[in-house]
Length: 169
Length: 185
Image (cartoon, rainbow over all chains, first blue to last red; front, side, top):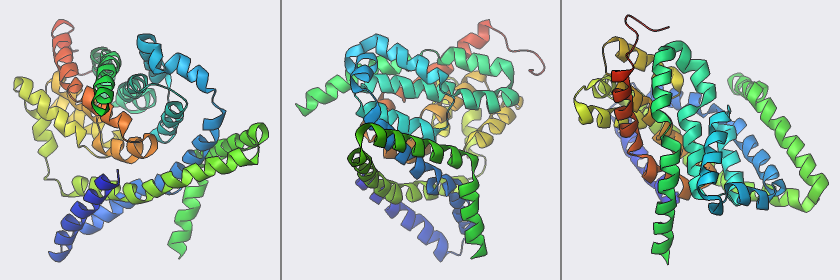
């Protein structure tokens, strides 16, 4: 992860440094936009992390493992998909929750299904933004076509994880 | 100084921040009650490592996303999604969706404009699916720092072709289930 971060900083240094040398007037807009979208990382995100850190040790691990663990197989993938459809929460709450579940014994394929279902369905986003802007036909068409995403991704993940673990020995 | 202060007040007064802080306080109190002070201290200590990752990683991703947003040639995304030619259009729409920065307030008005301009439903559905499922910036700022690299890596490998497939299904569905003529309500 630090390698990825380092590469990104290096690329940024080149891009922004070149723009600065050329006196590119878009530089100000870049920084303003980054600051604007960065606001939640100052307050909300660290606090959500602290909350997730506190919740983690209290989650009954054996229950998570039974319902959403790798041994829960296809039924775990389906259960995770339904949970993903029903969670109307923003990413700052959703991802700490996923992290807590992972630590408590949830399986990777089950979490892939959960995240995929939450991503494509995203009930908070669909109702608040997509439906009013795009209309009923587009939303229904997209959701109907997307039904296959969580189970396909979840089942494929079973094989990817198995391959990966086999590779590592 | 005044500006910094008002920004700080804005962050603290934010509704989500207040809610999350209350949740953190409640969870911390409950943990203390159930497992004692050591468990609380251990949880906070675990958080430190994550804070460090966030501090290094997130500013880079935010800047990168802003660079894409501000410096990308205008109309490139529109051209990519608008490409009507078969599978190529779906693949281009998927790539455009993966690299579209920003939230729904950027993405959906663009999709609507393209729909009115006559782009095909399959490509638009592929674009929205890629943007929600594989958004590179969301994966980098939220998913990787919180959950570690393994889950996003497996998810990316198993999902990267799905927007194209979903677009194909939508195209096929739109053929048997006709779009409403002259606008949609």
